[in-house]
Image (cartoon, rainbow, N blue to C red; front, top):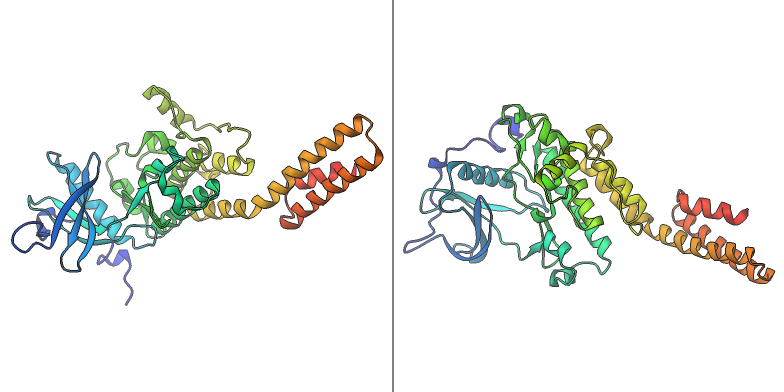
Length: 361
């Protein structure tokens, strides 16, 4: 028998924290023994732990001491959403319960690795050793895995609302996980949610400020595009020293300029994904992922066309300078071969088409 969220038996729902069974973190025969602190946020903290039943290392997330009931509820919802969304790019949840103080806590897979944000900010980070030597390809493949997780969540009626490099973990063997589902929400319950702004301003879509109860899957697509922006430019989509300027950037969401060395196909895709009007963005996270895959497939053709273009510029200069016909003929043959090879790999390559036309002229 297959159950759907509408059956009411599975899927994120409201749970009374007082009804949670104890995880038994202390005492003579504990189920789990907490260990070293792995990370801490505004809502909770994550520690390594030993699962005595299965004799394995896990991660234990608990509410930070002294926080209010709102943080407890958010951690509980994170556990429910993460546990509901079983996917290779979402960290598995093993158990949900209460800690020794009666606060919600959950046990999940221990991911040994680092955050994508740390990798992007440190080109010498040892975590790069598990990824492709081609850094751009590695980053686009990580983003493609994040798109997979987001598309799966959307298929289950869930928005993440806080996609950013800091919420992506890259394991020591290159595995990728989209984490921190504390702000996730069911699409069918958006109108019942508080009319409040949630998310991270530096990556936020304009509708998250203007109409936080009227979000769609393309809101998460914007966040994916904002993440791509950081990959390509090295800085967040909405950057600035003043809070007002960052908010203004969110509201306007104007197309951005990138350094000339950034591939145009990617800059165009990034500006489409972060367009102010949702209908101008890719229709889904899967569509965005496929666009990234097409770029990686075309990349070799683009490189061939660029090299042929450099030789064509030399040909044009030497032709104006009156170089020998044999020299010009050799350069022309070299350029034509390069453009034709690029078109053989990707027949729609616009740069190769225009370059070959210039050769013929």
